[in-house]
Amino acid sequence: MPVMPGRQEVLVLVAALAGLGACTAPPSITAQVTGSLLIESADHVHLNSSGGGSVWVDGLDLAAHLALWQTVKVQNPQLSWSVPSARVVGAGVNGPRAVHLADLNQDGHLDVVAGLYLDDKVIWYRNQGNGTFDAAQTISSATNAATAVYTADLDNDGDQDVLSASYQDDKVAWYRNDNGVFSNQMVLGTTNGARDVVAADMGTSGQMDVFAAGTLSDRIVQFPSTGSAFGSKIDLELNVNGPHVVRTGDLDQDGFVDVITAGSSDGTLYWLRNQGGSSFALETDGIIHAQLASPRDVQVADLNGDASLDIVVCNAYDNTVLWFANDGTGKFGPAQAVSSVLRSPTSLATVDLDEDGDLDIVCASGNDGLVSWLRNNGDGSFSAAMTLMSGAQLPYDVAAGDVDGDGHPDVVVASYSDDAIFWIRNDGWANLSETRLATA
Figure 1 (cartoon, rainbow, N blue to C red):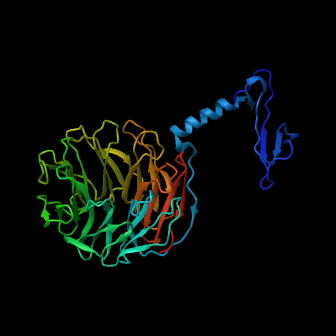
Figure 2 (cartoon, rainbow, N blue to C red):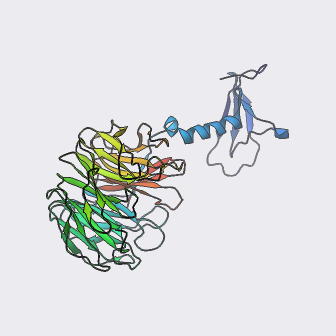
Figure 3 (cartoon, rainbow, N blue to C red):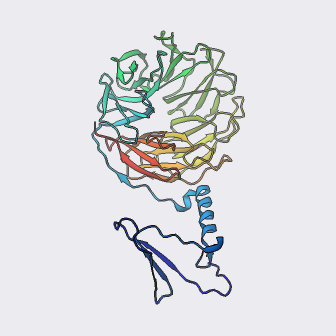
C-alpha cells in the first residue's frame, strides 16, 4: 500500500464486542508492540476527523477507498464473491421438477408453485410476506409425473390460475383459482410426453392461449382460449425432435406473439412466426441454430439492451450456455458463449440480480449440483459463473422474483433429489443466502 510522505505505517484493528448492549463508555485504544492500534468498543466505532478532513488508515484515505471498493464490488461482484450459506427450514416434497412464482391469493406477495414428478402432485406455498412460507397446499394429485407448472389469468377473473404438464399421462391441464382456492383438474388435452407448458396473449383477443411441448410426440400444440374455456388442440406445423421446452415472445416486433422451441434430439432451435392472430409458420429465418447439444431450456429476453428479444439456451450434452442476438426483425446472429463449465445445465432464468439495468442469467446444472449467476456486463458479454448454491442433488428448475418483499429479486430452486425447494435471498448487493421452504 502507498504511504503518506513522512508518515509511519500503522495498522488499525477494530473490535466490536458483541452482546454488551448499547455503548456506555468511550472506546479503548491500545498501542501494540507490533505498531498496531487496537480499538475496542461495545458499539460501532466511528473514525472521524475534525474540520471535515479525511481519516487516513495505513496510508489510505479511508472514506475514499471504501467508496471505491463499493463501486468495484458493484461492477465486479466476483472479486468478493463467496458461496451463500444454507439455512434449512424444512423438506419433504418428493421429486420437485418444476417451480414458478406468482401471487396466488392477491395479498401482494409472490407465492411458490411446484410440480412434483415422483409425488404426482401440483402444490403451492403461501408466502407470508417476509420470505417465510406456510406448509405446502395441494392443488392437484391427478397428475402422473408433473414436469412443468405455469400461471396466468386464464378465465379473466383477476386471479392467477395454474397450468401443469405431466409426462407419464400426457396431460396438459389447468386449475381455476378463486383467491387461493383451486378447482379440480380440468384437462385441456394431451400430447405424448407432455414436458412443458406456457400461456400467452396472442395480441388480438386479450385472451390467453396455452402452448405445450410433447417430447415423445415431437410436437408443439396450442389450445386457443375462448375467454373462459378452451377450444380443441391445434397441432403447430413443425416437426421438432424431442422438444423439452416451449416459449413465447414477439421476436419480429409486429405486435403478435411468436413461438420458440428447441429439439433436444435434433439440436435445432426454432421460432414460428405469428401470421397475425393464432396462425403460425416456420419461415426461412425460422431455424436459429441447428447444431445444439441436447437443449434443455430456452429463455427469451433482451440481453443487450437494444429493445429486441434475444434468446438464451442451455445444452446438457456439451455443458454450454449460449445466446443469440436478435436484430429486431427476428433474424438472429451466431451463437455467443455465456458459459462452458457448468455440467449438464438444465434450467435458466433471466433477472437483473445486481440491479444495474442489465438482465443476468441464473442457471441450474444437475451434474455438478450448482445454481450459478452469470452476470451481464451490459455489452453482450458475461462474467464467469458465480455460485449461488452448491452441493444440491440434481437442481432441476429455477425461477426468480422478489420473495421477501424487500425490492430485490431472489432465486427459487427446485432440487429434485434433495426432495426440497430452496430460495436464495438477495439483500440488494446481489449478496445471497439460501433457505429451504416449509415441509409439505
